[in-house]
Length: 328
Image 1 (cartoon, helix red, strand yellow):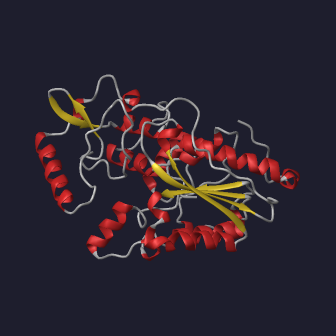
Image 2: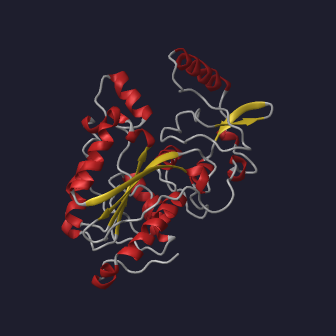
Image 3: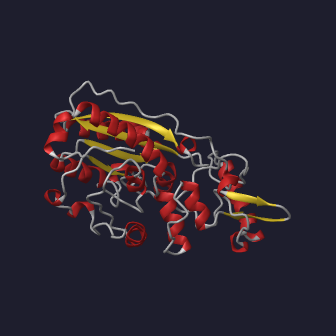
């Protein structure tokens, strides 16, 4: 669900999983997805999905839209006097439609991802609604905040991961635990940068002055929005979907000249997408896609724990053919 460019698919296929169905309504994300996987997701809104048409499967995964819950999204909507969260007319319905699909398709496990602010939005009421909805469907729910920098990418990217198991098909007690760290050493930003930077990525002096004024205004308002000159020998900050608008959130210092933003290829590596995957959309769309994406390595780590639970607790499912054994 909400396939985007396939971050969930990459992470779960690395564990031996096979994708039997995907859906994504954004035409640019569908173009990237088709290039990477050979066929596009179904191009419809989740409201138009016929759950009966979804093949039998063990795990349903997805990152439902986060704009209504993110700090930046809520701040922007407040400034415009617009509703956010579940009242967001454009995105607020998404979780409830997802829950309807879950209720009809009855996956053994559900794996969802969203922004950290989901847990505290509306004084915690948003998360309580989500948890209660899944529990009322007969699922046991687990939640944690994971940071991608501990799963192989040089980015501080904290995201909420929600895992839910169908209690009627996964006998309890369910001993699921989220992974805290991935394999390998913690990378640095310099590890994913091009040896020869594209001069076109260098921002203008005018843009830099604008960044400084922007940061000063937000400092007066006592919030954290502004530009960020990063230390390339450390991890960088979260890459947002609107990174194409000047790149002020992640600026790479350059000796003797203005700083630069990440190139689209560097942005892909910043999220952990392999270099052999082609970028087939404009720079603006590529930045948006990577800024919205889930980190495949984090999905792989969480997915491995989900599969461990399914294989320990669901012998019956092996027999009914809905869950082929997965190895990785």
